[in-house]
Length: 400
Ligand code: HEM
Image 1 (cartoon, rainbow, N blue to C red):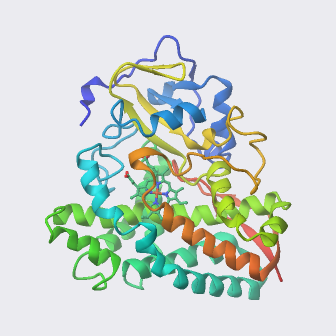
Image 2: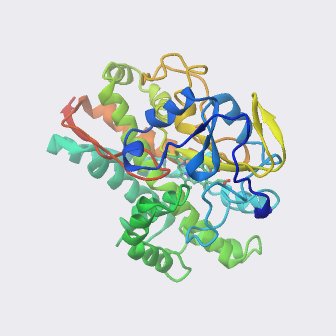
């Protein structure tokens, strides 16, 4: 655990500084471009308002993400020790992190998830058929959210009633990755019933016996984790695994609508579904940033960090880095090359196989059933300190 008395609150002499606030509603509504614009100031910049550093370039971010020895996850910019969010995994380093990660990972491997593929495909078909019957729909409220709120809670074995609360819970959780501002506070007020729902519906007594949540809670019987930790693990999957995937699916549809040349390619070659997910993770990544703190004085890619510097790695800006990507402002499903949208190293998104399966199920149903997807009015961006994407995205679906 990093000693918080070492945290730096004065700007380094050599780094560019800015008084910009990247957590206003206006800034957030203009993501990812607003974050990417910080790269004009330098590869990294000191945020005067938050006494911390933002890093904008793909290469140093790619280097720092897995380097837990030099960049700890146990202290982060904006971290609130009194947070209601489960204090496990993303805020741990080895060896504690390894125990929790290994315990949970066995349920999220490709082999463990494979049996769910058919149910995902069936639900994706149902959701797209219902959307087609209406013609003009909101890609978030009518496609991404109902799909994710059905398939993942079914898998976990959660109550059918009140599942929509999970999105408010995730919204609040993601706000804690940023500063305790008005956006954060409003989401916590909104999420009060959601926190209660989550508390009530993630216990041994309330989850469906034999479901995934039940299996995670039973890890405590084996002595792998304590009961309290097992409950944190269930809640961590709720906090991390819903809003992200809903946003991710809608962000793919947003990319298709704004760059219509992609959709005919995807229909002609269904294998491009995988690329479409990767391209979304670069172009409009649902997870805006990851926090770390430097354990020592260290230089990465020409950026000089001091022990105790708190660092936000802006995945949004990394995806638009013109040193890494040609024409970064273009959504192109033919693009190849690894991006950092799922993080990297020991904290690499634990639900990435699941998120990919969910997204690919929707894309697969779309390309089979829908001839064209067009914008049906201006969308509205989701306002959250650290979760990026569409809150509403009106689209018109033309049947195949
Ligand atoms: C498109 C959807 C998703 C995106 C963009 C995303 C993104 C990320 C990122 C960037 C991290 C790295 C955190 C860090 O480095 O500190 C992460 C970690 C994590 N994700 Fe995801 N995620 C998504 C979906 C999911 C799903 C469906 C789950 C469900 C299980 C999930 C569970 C987790 C967990 C538990 C961690 C923490 C892992 C650790 O610290 O070892 N995520 N995710």
